[in-house]
Structures are given as C-alpha cells and as structure tokens.
Length: 90
Image (cartoon, rainbow, N blue to C red; front, top):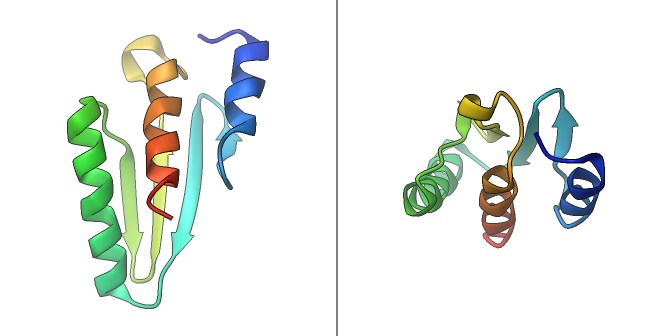
C-alpha cells in the first residue's frame, strides 16, 4: 500500500479519477459505441505496454476504467503510471 502522502500527490496529477476503496476509477463518455471501443483499444495498448491491466466496463458510449493491483490488495505506483498514460489520450 502507498503512504497517504504519495496517494494524495499522485491523485492530484490525475484528471477526473476518483479514489474508490482500494482502486481508482474514471468514466469517459463518447458519442457512440464505436468511439468507446476505439478508446478501449488504445487503453489496451497502454495496459499491454505496462503489463498492468485495468478492468474496463463498456456500456455503449461510456467506458469505466478501474485500476488496482490485486497482488498488493490495493493501489501501487503501477496503477498511477497507467492512469497518467491513459489521461494523455485526451
């Protein structure tokens, strides 16, 4: 688990992510299902690059991303590294 100071510092760098227990989540809204899938595929590329995979829930034009590190039973720097790279997608 990350110290509270590190958690707060890393959360401050993210755009529209929420702390949800032992994970961070973000919803991204698109015009339609096709745009949602295109975004999800870009997230998949980031996940593969980091070998750290978010849970993705796609509901038509909404993509919900949840990051946690299951082996640590909570948040690690890897979660924040992936979230920061996802944020760069726009």
